[in-house]
Amino acid sequence: MADLGSFGSLASTINAVASPFRGYLNDLYNKHRVLKKGKVADYIPELALASPESFGICVVSTDGQAFEVGDCEQTFTIQSISKAFVFGLALEDHGRKYVNSKVGMEPTGEAFNSIILDEATNRPYNPMVNSGAIATTDLIKGRNGTERLKRILEMFERYTGRAHDINVPVFLSEKQTGHRNRAMAFLMLNFGMVGEKIDETLDLYFQQCSMLVNAKDLAMMSATLANGGVNPVTGVRAIDERYVQDVISLMLTCGMYDASGEWAYRVGIPAKSGVAGGITAVASGKLGIGIFSPPLDAKGNSTRGIKVCEELSRDFGLHMFNTATPKHDLTSWMNGDDHSLGW
Amino acid sequence: MPKVVSVHSYRGGTGKSNFTANLSTTIAAQGFRVGVIDTDVPSPGIHNLFCLEQEEVDKTLNDYLWGEASIDEAAYDVSAKVGVELPGQIFLVPSSVKPDDIARILQVGYDVGKMNDGFRSLVRQLKLDFLFIDTHPGLSKETFLSIAISHVLLLILRPDKQDYQGTAVTIDVARQLKVRRMLLAINKAHSELNLDALQAKVSETYKESVAGIFPLSEDFARLASEGVFCVKYPAHPLTKEFQRVAKAIMEGD
Image 1 (cartoon, chains in turn orange, brown):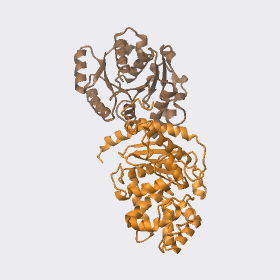
Image 2 (cartoon, helix red, strand yellow; image 1 turned 30 degrees about the vertical axis):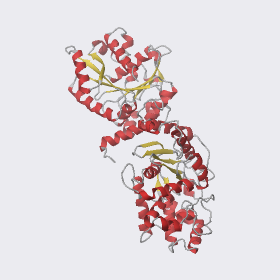
Image 3 (spheres, helix red, strand yellow; image 1 turned 45 degrees about the vertical axis):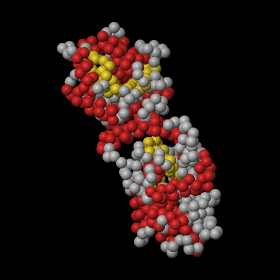
Image 4 (cartoon, chains in turn red, orange; image 1 turned 180 degrees about the vertical axis):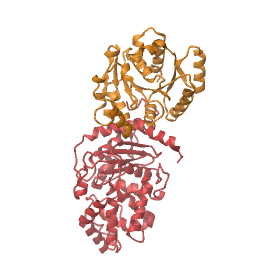
């Protein structure tokens, strides 16, 4: 990545603000801001406090341009979105073969918190359901809980380019009410699919889910994946390039809970959602999308987030299997070479 | 397609507001719908040229930037005040001249993204053919945005060493911001200068076209910003020169 210098970096910011693509995102924002569908998660009191009005859309291109509209700086807990990225770290720690022996890669069609394991192998179905995510977190190396947490936080810092904190009240609430997750962990312990350090691993799992991010971080994370594992702004490698496809393919098949099949068909941008209202979506080689809007549909995905991804996919041909000429050409809209666009 | 025109200069007192008012009026008089935004929030003034009095102003650009008004609520139809007739129309979005408002915007700053959204929204809601952006002199985030978004950047300079150097800097910045089209206008050229030679030299130095050259004028000074010059003096040589620059703005893509 070229060193732009102070003026170059400001010029890049200004060009992104002035680009027709940001104008397009602003129209999307205004169109869906008034959407009243969905319900803010309330299984713990901290999440129920989120404002249903909060809404931010950020897109980061693989050449490092950031397009932001709305509440892109407001932080919220990452929740299930962490699962995809921690899975990548587990792959780096142990390699594909070993990780695959502990957690499968098959969508369940069941809700994210269902207590089921593959009967033949005793593995949880995939790393995106709670059981699979706990088994994945169990694989994260480190001498103790603190070191393992530090490794996870440092990994996210490589993706986003900034340090992250844990929201302690959310962590404590998740821990206090997470009986179902504890039950799953013990079931997996019974089958020898997770190690003996159950309490440490569960703490780590609740902590990774309680990490604070904003919509821009989510866009930066998916842009990093879209860019082959290298953060397009800082130039730092966040994940071994061999495992980028593992993370993205499981986002495609399992990332949107039990709506993943319909998502792959309708939107076709591999994505992962979280119960606090975040969505991160990867258009490989092109861009990353980060959205924050707390109201969720019945399957646990952000209602405004779904709409935004659907329209972006349709208008710019971002569906991974799209071969038709899209309504808008992404490069021209982002670079603003043609200033007749978007007025 | 609507056309956004930013009127800018590196230094103050070059005549940005006067150029903005005269050019926008000249274009509106030809039957176009023209918007003018005063983005010079630290030192607003163009409302005087359009004879928009303080007691007539409720919402301003400041209110829009603070999220306290929509951009069209801050737009005033000044067509009748400057004598523009239908189908031509001219709308002004003034900045606030209240010290508290100026202090607030300087202290807190504002989101340039919101400013950009305001430009687009004003163009759509008022179905504008042209949007003129009157800027604060010098380089700032806000100026960069105006430059980056405009289809035509009109840079005004005086035959003065300080202006020459500043204009070079501004042109360099504008090129990095991928500006579509740049036009130069030379203002306040004193009577001993050979105008043709000056125009050729400026154009050669900056490798940009000079759309107009305006001699220092007693008549202009006498009007003292109380109205739009080209309306008051329709046959004046300066009015002809404004028409020439307006034509250059309207031509081209």
